[in-house]
Length: 266
Image (cartoon, rainbow, N blue to C red; front, top):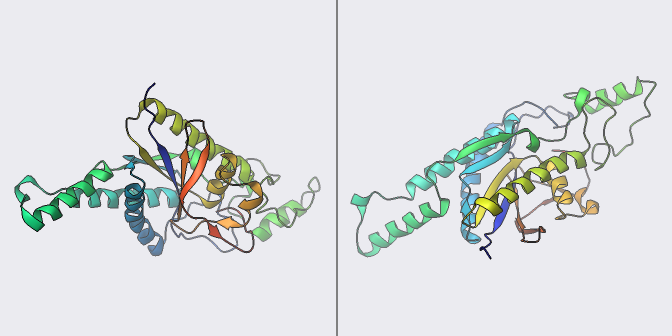
C-alpha cells in the first residue's frame, strides 16, 4: 500500500483593504491599504513558522481568490517567502566551521523547509467571496430600498447579511453557504490531486475571504453551522485544516476570530 502523505491547508483571509462604508464586501474591486500590504508581508513568516511547527513543506504555489485584495495578499506573501528562502540559503563559498558554520547550516535548513526560492500565485474565481449579484457595490440601505421598491419581493429579514442560507433576490446573488461550497469543492480537488501526485507532507496556502472560508469550513465539517455566525477572521489571520485518509477534515492550528454579534460576509 502506497505511503499516504499529509495534506494541510492554511485558510487565510486577505489583508486590510479599502472597503466603502456600509457596503458588503462581496466582489468589491478595491485594493489593500498600506496596513494590509504590511500584514501580507508579515504573513510569510507566520506561514513558515506553521510549516516548521507541523513538519510540512510549503506548496510552491499559493492559491488565491481572483479579487484584487486576495491576489495582492498572496502576491506580497509569496514575494516575501521567496526572500526568506533565498536569505536562508548560504552560498557554497560562505561555508565555515564552528559556531558560524552551525549558524549557516541552520539557515540552509530554514531554506529547505520552504521548499523553493520562488513562489507562484494562482488565481481562482472559485475562491471569491459570495456574490451580491445585481446588488453589487450598493450600500445596505440601497439594497433594502431596491427590495422595497420591487412589488414582487418580500422585505429582507433583519439577519439577511449573516444568515448562512439567505440569498438576495437578485440575479447572480449567492448565499454564504453557496460561496462556502465553491471554496470547499476547490479544496477537495486540491486534496485529490495531492493524494495522487505528492511525495511529501504539504501545506497549501489558500488566500480567500472571511465569509467564504468560514462557510467552506461548515461544508467540510470543520465548523457546525450553529458556530459560524459567532466567528470571523482577522485580516491575514489563518486557520489550519488537515484532510485525513478517510476524507475527514480537522482543524489542527490557527484560530478563528470570536465576535459577539454576527455581521456576515467578508
